[in-house]
Amino acid sequence: MIFTNEPLSRDHPFRAIENVIISLHRSSAFDGWAEGSAQMFAQNLHRYRQGQALQNNADPGLGY
Image (tube, rainbow, N blue to C red):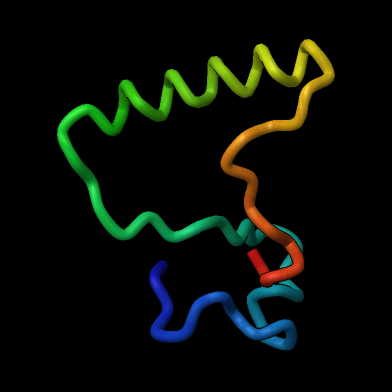
């Protein structure tokens, strides 16, 4: 689902449902996005295994 106001407010009813996962909203697609996403995942997996900070993190302080 895409919402008019993002991120959802902290008191939005969906936040109280245990089987709902709220994730980032991707607003566009482009040629090569799947390959780019796979590369980003692989790079972050490598960084994770090395104990390094991950790139492109969501910010829970912003609500997502």
